[in-house]
Image (cartoon, rainbow, N blue to C red; front, side):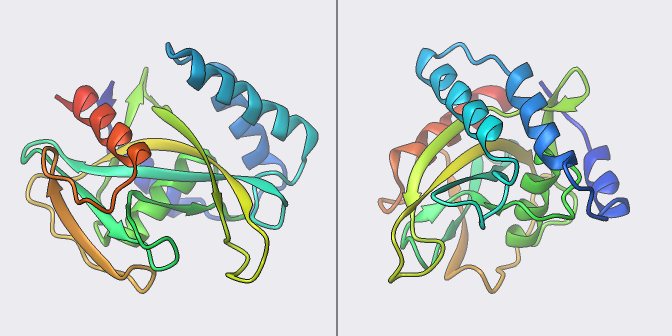
Length: 206
């Protein structure tokens, strides 16, 4: 995998809604991606079943489950990852969130979220054969419709976003805190899914 800077420019130039395009791209991305881990492959097939049953399954209005997109923002030169302290979850997480109608594709949604939440404008998603590719899936329960509402399920598709060496982050309104952490010194309030994603990012970026 290699990092490319072309994806961000494409996202910025093309933000008009395209009905059905985001759903079709998610099906394509998950069909093409074949993880070596059997549990990840079972999740991949579950995601595809969800999309097959739910034409609107990319958006938060689809309940009880919907696809989300996220990215671990890393600075490989410094051996560090940028994490956000999520106000609803109360834990340090990677950048990410809900897909929007203006997202050109699933990778664009992950890159948009990473850019908005990190404040770093020139992130680049890791690619394979010139195209961004997921590195991990994570299914988890949340209350994104409100604290007093029933839990729903996020079917998260995770990418890796490489920051330029020495990149300076800018906290957004969506975060209680935003900090760089050394790969070997992640905060205690971080779940195993984030730790696994950071380990995967470290492996793929050297």
